[in-house]
Length: 101
Image (cartoon, rainbow, N blue to C red; front, top):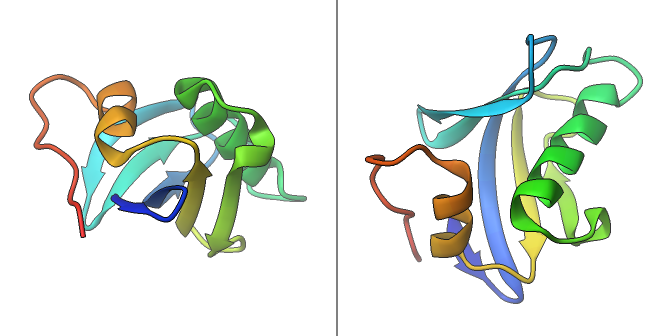
């Protein structure tokens, strides 16, 4: 996760078909998010965008998948937020803070 022009770039590892949509911590160099949607017809991507937009309190149009739409590993861009603010909204207390570049 790092600040970029106009928002944040976020690396995500997605686990589809979970019991519920939630952020569960760090997975390698990404944040792991379980989504309660299957990975077909873009349903998991739609659920991921809905979840991130809800956490950030931004419109869904401010959350964009930059890379990895067909993969579990994705790079997202979220407009209108900072890395520090997003980290506080997504991660459980005690996790190390965001990486800034």
